[in-house]
Length: 318
Picture 1 (cartoon, helix red, strand yellow):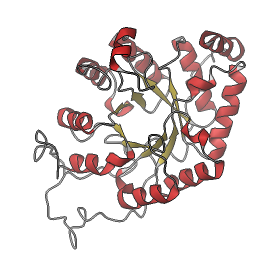
Picture 2 (cartoon, rainbow, N blue to C red; picture 1 turned 180 degrees about the vertical axis):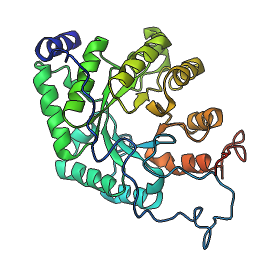
Picture 3 (cartoon, rainbow, N blue to C red; picture 1 turned 90 degrees about the vertical axis):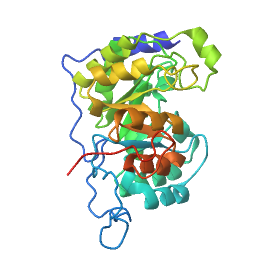
Picture 4 (cartoon, rainbow, N blue to C red; picture 1 turned 90 degrees about the horizontal axis):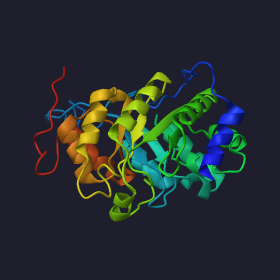
């Protein structure tokens, strides 16, 4: 079924002769400049805690040290909860992602409220990897067009393109990137080494399925950079999630061979994002659960941490 969907995409769409570069839209993955963001107490040198040593955050729009948080998925929440999160921690949040097809389960007005609220705080809004399900529809090209048009109409800025459950050629993936960019949206491919990722599958079952060679991630990543992709997500399953031992070699190879600002790592578990910041510093791009934004921000700022990071996360900047 998946192969037919991908095949029909090739036959009807055809690969463009040249790459379609994403338009310079008003809201990139790194979000708009913040014009009137209230100072945090730690930033306030006159009346707050600015006298306390800390690592200053790069102001929005960020290309490094980007933090994307999960929208309603493992727990349901609406505009009042998100408003609390953004009013308290909005300066530290760059993106909001609706995992999977979670947004399709909500009334449209509720989705729009969350999208609009995020935009008010200069936070971009991303779909999850629901494109995988869209591609399994009988007429994939038509379904993709309708899906993207509706996403843009609702106000999404970014469309994630993952292939954790589907097998289709790299050229098809690049066609999808071009299609998303042609609609005035940003494409965010999700790459990984584990087939079946994204479904919270047991480690034993994933191990039986096997993993891809890390070079596949690198080679695809380079193609996406050439196609004008601003940032890619690296799927945690098979690397730091649902594995018996972490595949740090994949992470090292990714950061060695791809531009750091083009890569974001899924790290929705405190020991994982603690390791990323410890190993690669405060400017590593991370995706975490919305409930973890305070803990991650304290770690990036160098004011709190675990036993191996407390008092050890620093920066050297003017």
